[in-house]
Image 1 (cartoon, rainbow, N blue to C red):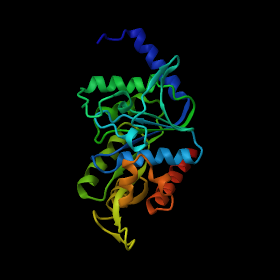
Image 2: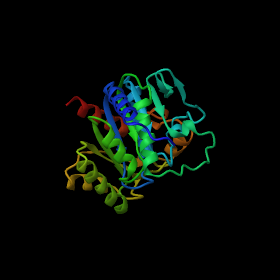
Image 3: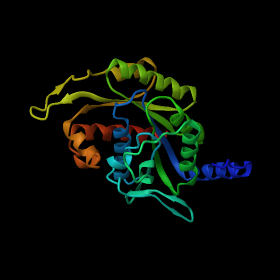
Image 4: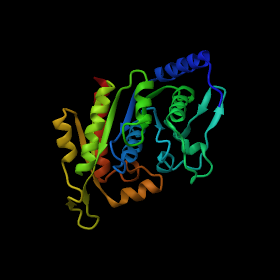
Length: 274
């Protein structure tokens, strides 16, 4: 692969600044540990904002496990180039998405890349995707504090903040505390912590069971002085909605999870107005 010249790098940096200047609010979703439902939160946050008539984009920088396309029901779409850049997939009239999954024909093909190539790809997504004017860009990153979230936080000018997703389990809370300190080290505002899988809602009796515990994420947020956005329970139908490409904020707006997610979205919107 031919290295970019200094002029080409400068031109790309300028394109990145110009693209990001058209987006009012840029929010990165991170987690210290995998399997906590971070992508589910990112997808439903973006979809919920779009349902409120905001212009929204969602960017999947989880390059090794890009799941946003499937969870939005667009996994058979493919990205195309136009004379103004890479065109994102259209999910709703006011919701656009970019994911590496939309560029790969073989869904089983693993992405075996080292850090420099991953950073190059993320930079190209930020500089060359034709988002147009957006109110929100939601960035879903892989778990941990490695190359991808680091690249996002360092490349995006004036990033609005980070949402940290955890579960109530001690091992997840331990890693979420690292995510909070990670964002502070990079001077990224912490919008808050979401405690996902917080209790289980029985589909028969509708009672809540402390399957993985409750309150650990809130306690961790309070101890580290980070805002707590809310706790979302486990509901069996959420898995079905995610697998079928229907975000739960739209598929079942009366569910407890959708109601709580709506409250979380309103809190985030309120922070953006401050």
